[in-house]
Length: 204
Image (cartoon, rainbow, N blue to C red):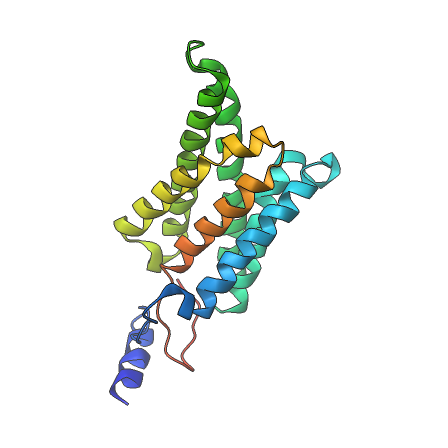
């Protein structure tokens, strides 16, 4: 009873309601769904990127942004406006990382082998894209305004960005996109407020 009253009080103050968070992320249905949406969007985004009329390369960010935005509205963590803002930031972060990767490949020393250049580019682009989108999330959602969440998300993006090398080696981009987007979505979900049952509210 005390926890429920505390949750209601927190809501009135515009804060995340107090509640007990699951001990492991896989016990939180929202985190699992976010991760699965990341995997699915990575596969779908790779398919749509083949068609210019669907946005070409930008469609990777579009698909991921839309999938996550719709879910955020569904679980009442975002208004339609904030969700749309996230989707737009997703496209921007992806395109900046994508363009930067192309430029960086040529900028790296020719003494490095092509494999090493792709490996380094993947890490840098993964870090850049994750850091930009994590910062945008923090600007949009109060519950994500913690340094450790942003830093962790950026580092995870860098680590999974290394998958660019096998993705290029096997000429199968989902090897990069599906795990990267799943990992990013999970990092995002780990910052979700613990909402007590029956007290769901839209974040500000």
